[in-house]
Length: 40
Image 1 (cartoon, rainbow, N blue to C red):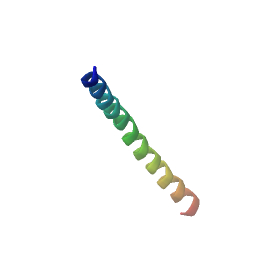
Image 2 (cartoon, rainbow, N blue to C red; image 1 turned 90 degrees about the horizontal axis):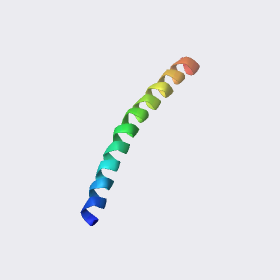
Image 3 (cartoon, rainbow, N blue to C red; image 1 turned 120 degrees about the horizontal axis):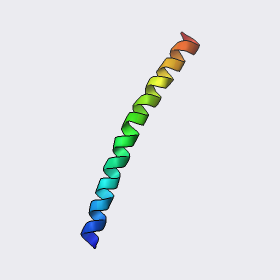
Image 4 (cartoon, rainbow, N blue to C red; image 1 turned 120 degrees about the vertical axis):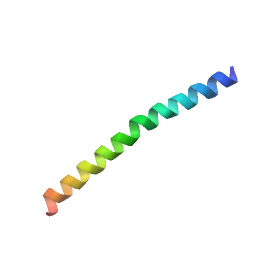
């Protein structure tokens, strides 16, 4: 049981990281574009 829980947590974390990293990159690019448009 314990091993299964650990495995599920690892998989879950991997999925969350796979989702969060592209989202962060997207947010960063959007912020950069907005800054260019507002201040540039």
